[in-house]
Image (cartoon, rainbow, N blue to C red; front, top):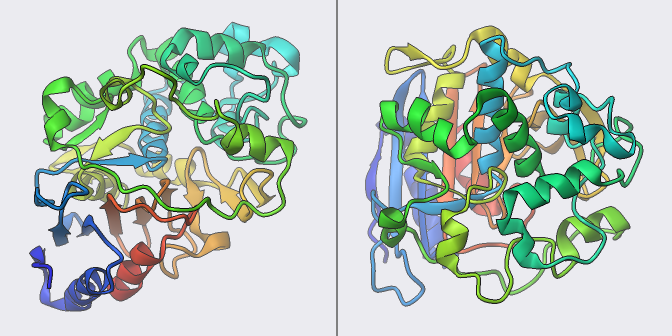
Length: 373
């Protein structure tokens, strides 16, 4: 039996039972699940091991790579620029990043780029996987690239390129990288253990991943899906590139590191009118605008009918985060997620280091969320 640490308020006792069941069925290596209701932490559970050899406990200080769950953080950072009047969702990307107008992308707006409508899900032409470690190179390639479908006509998930697009928009407006802004404006002042670009002194706290044994089910393959996920260069890597370099690099779509508690507290603010620890981090109007539907339909990369806000997944078509029609959030490769239910003033996050092959709606997280509801 694995010892379950942390707590769940009595009204959420079923969540602790579900968390224990995931371990009892050998579905987990290490994991953490946190819930915030009306600004109060009502569940914070962790258990298991942080390493594959099962010699180090997964504890309250363990940081976990959350992959695409990072996109929700990037979307929040963009929303804060909009809230401050420094950017508008309906202005073109090229208005802040002129080079982006190349190859017919001049009319793509910020909200369309954030909702995966720009037609840049990956690079179809051969490149080195190590190129992803060169921010300026990738941004030049994206600016010059012709869209793989007519922009604004459909969504097609941008698993890695999203972070460079959102991050470069942010950098052109703010002057800082997203990782720096997250650290200086939110994570540091609010005491949130959440990072985009993990400093070397924090690396020993990062959990080792147990990779899945198979590939996700992408459905019928097409050129966009191949470019996004299935080429040798579709994600950062390459000879001589270490895991430390990957952790250190700022990729706001893919390499956030966090505790579940930090994610739940940050997005708990969006479930509670924007407030956290007496500070409003996003106005109620911008929370609604962030989550507002931008496009709905069969995604050209993911095998799902998706409904996208300005960088967040809306729950109404996929129903992976409870029953709420207004719930939104993001899933990450292997199983992590964060979600916000503004109707119930509830937010939660799940992180783990044993990855599954499910693209969204990991069965372990769904069991916990269903128990919570």
